[in-house]
Length: 111
Image 1 (cartoon, rainbow, N blue to C red):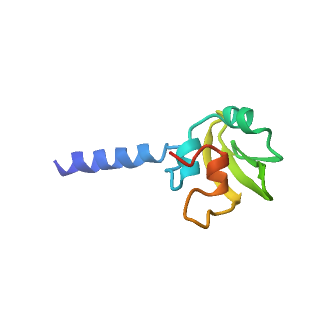
Image 2 (image 1 turned 30 degrees about the vertical axis):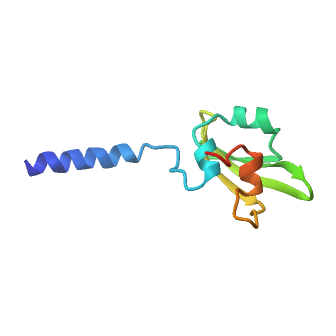
Image 3 (image 1 turned 90 degrees about the horizontal axis):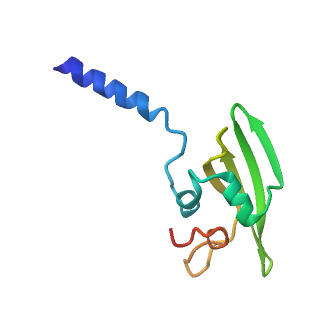
């Protein structure tokens, strides 16, 4: 019986290692992780740079220019062209506690 539990635990651990999309920790990740990079760039414009490394590509994007504000994010994209992580690198928080500028611009404020 103990060996079955150990085997099942090992199998579960091995399967969790196969996950390619990170667990969302903020509204941007909740909105965009798992979506195609093509849908992101079609909606918001092309990236300003990209760097490939080991089956993933890191894209930098900047946009959402409004009243002296802009949004800058890094998107990690796998070889299937799906976003596995998105991280704001230039953002403005709402002083009233609402969604940040990037969350508003990138349609993640209500996710």
